[in-house]
Image (tube, rainbow, N blue to C red; front, side, top):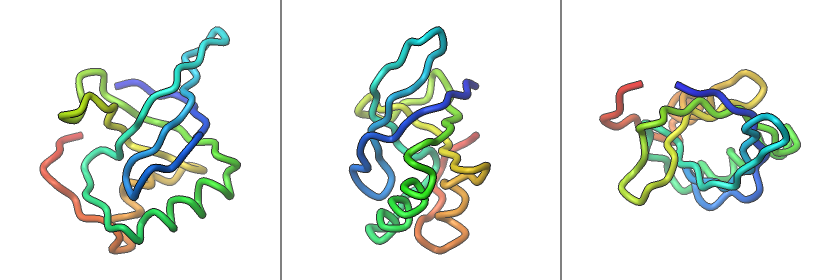
Length: 102
């Protein structure tokens, strides 16, 4: 399990975004990140945009090195101000949990 600070560049859809990930030592990498363990509804995108914009695009990602989707995208738990957006989307009825183990 790895934890990184990141800056959101673009929110693609209700569970995918592009972010610059801070690897430390002044090294960043731009990657597509998919929210781990959820299938989100289309209306979840607006909620995600609002939350991330309030945080000036700053997020924390908690990722597993071996967890990627079928397209090679990084799967991660996404946190804003200490709140896990993956769980928050489920709690608000904007996403459903699917077969994913943390």
